[in-house]
Every structure is written in structure tokens, then in C-alpha cells.
Figure 1 (tube, helix red, strand yellow):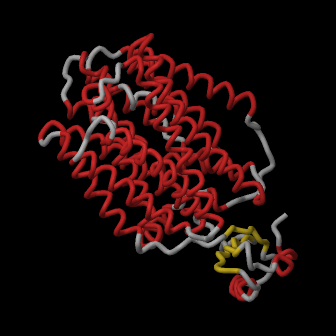
Figure 2 (cartoon, rainbow, N blue to C red):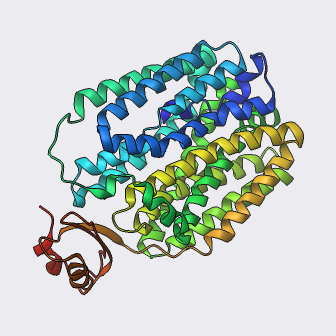
Length: 427
């Protein structure tokens, strides 16, 4: 993710020197990786269920390195687009999440997922500062050479320190199931969350078609100084976001903090369209990054609580596909809008998308403090076992896997009577 993010803060400034440049081509270069990521997330997840996680992850990283080398060697805008598309074809996000579920116990899984989410957030912040610094010394090709080295480092770390062979209990939640997709797409709450991550990354990618240019041309920030400007904006946004997110969790007001953050994104885009200036532009960008950080952290957590038991793998595949497709549409829409309509119209369009997202978010069901518990049904009939477990206080839902002795119970962590479930824990 660090490698994919590093071009965001600089591409709009450095791509002008490449043959074939236009705002539309800039947007496609920024977002094309999202198209290949979106197309391959679920297929590679299915492949990892059949042949194992390790071959898919290592293969994906090798494809990512190959794409980085193509982009580093590119001499035209088209060459960069091809390289970015190949980078995105290493679509291993869903497979990595499945591997984490395979290798962690139920009580530690939430912590592991939170750690990965935090690392992605940190990679975004680091990329915003590292990208301009590397480009100032090595140019745009240097950013892609460093990205290729990061991919190689990822392969070494994975092969050296991730267990090669472990005794893993069957965990249907980590699998992607084509038959589950239709039902999950009909779930109104999940649909709103998937639209949310789509809209968030659409707005992010479209905004970065013009943000570097705004900083350089309207605020007079030199290319060599971009790194500390982004550091202040993102660091300030993180500091502003953290207490809001913590308060929302503690006071059970996650929906209020979430919808407020969506409103802040919309408000920032609207004011950037109407009233940009030396003071207002940095303040609106700070507001945007603060809201982005909160939403990026909240969405996957909310999704894991909202998805039906035993279907998390498929739900995360759909979520990742929505996220990366949003990045592609955002790049394409941003480039086209700037080329045909201008910067002000682009921000107005993004404000309209943010407003539509806010309206959709108002219908979200507030997340409960839920977790999934894996149970063993033994020789008991599935219907009888489901009725028995649903009588235990705090059990919200249950999926009994036919043909197996496994069941996935969704329980409320605050009210569940774990003593009633303990005899059936899957060991």
C-alpha cells in the first residue's frame, strides 16, 4: 500500500513532462490500478482457497514488483498506465486478510485486523511525505524503483517470518463463496457500507488529480516542500480524528461520528469549489484528511460487525472490490472533469457525491459490539443445534455449515452468556 500511495501527492506535478499527458490521462494513471485490483480481488481470493494463501500472496507481490519496474522504465504516459495496471493485478488484500484469520485465534483476531488497519493508515501518512522526498531526489521513476524494492522486501519478510506450514482449523469465514454474493449484495446495511468505501476512495483519488496543483500554483508550495505540507495536513488530521473516534466508541455514538465525518468531507469539497484561498484551502484540506482518516478506520470495523456469520470472507471481498473500483472511477472522473469542466466543477461534483453518501449513511443501522464465535455442533441435527444456541442470551444469529460439524454464532460481547456456549467451542 505504501508503494501504491506514494505517487498520489506528486503525480499531477511530475506527469506533465511525459509524452501524451492530459488531465484525463493523469486521472487514468492515478486510478487504473484500482480497476485491476477490483477485477481480481474475489478471483484471487477463490484461488487462495483452493491452492493456499502463500502461492497467491507471493505471486501477487511478484506481479506488483513487475508492474513497478514497468512504470519505472516508462517513457510515456501510456507506459505508466500499463505499469500501474500491472501493479494493481497483484490484488492480494483479501487473501492477506484471510491468512490473518487462518493464523490467529478468535480472541486475537480483532487485534490483528486492527493492527493491519493501523499499518495501512500509517502507510498512507508515510507515503504522503516519502513520495515528494524521493521524487525530489530521484524523480518520478525513482518512486517506482523504490516501490519495486519495497515489493521485494515484502516477499523476503513473508517467506522468512510468516509460518510456512501451520495447523489451522477450518474457518469458513475466511473463504470466498460465489453463492453468498447475491445475498450479501441485497443486504441494505452492507450495501450502504460498500457504497461508502467506494465513494470515499472515489473522492480521494479524484481530489488528488488537483490537490498537488492547488498547493503548487495557488498556495505557492514548491515541489521540494510538499513533504512537510502533507505531513502537517495528515498529522493534524490524525490528531483531530482520534478523540472523535474514541468518543464515538465509548459513548456508543459511532453512527453520529460517522455521518458527521461524511458531512465534513462534503463540506470541504463544497468550500474548495467556491471559496479557495491562502487560509481556507489548507483548513479545508485539513478537515478533509481528518474525516478521511476516521472513515477509513471506521468502515472495515463496521463491516465486520454487520456481515452475517460465516460470510466475512465473501463480504470483505466485495468490500475490497468496491474500494478499489472507487479509486479507478475517481481517477477517471477527476481527470475527465478537470479536462472538460475545470477544477471548480470537479469539487462541486465530489460534493454532490459526498451528499449522496451522507443521505445513504443516515439509513445505516448503528453497529453493535458483536463478535463471531466458532462452535462445534457434534452429532446434533443442524436445526436442533441452531435452536439450542439461539436460546443462549446474547446470541444474535447463527450459521450451521451443512456437511460439517461447524457453526458460526454472532454474539453480543456485552450481553452474551459465554458459559452457555463454552461446551460447544470448536477445539
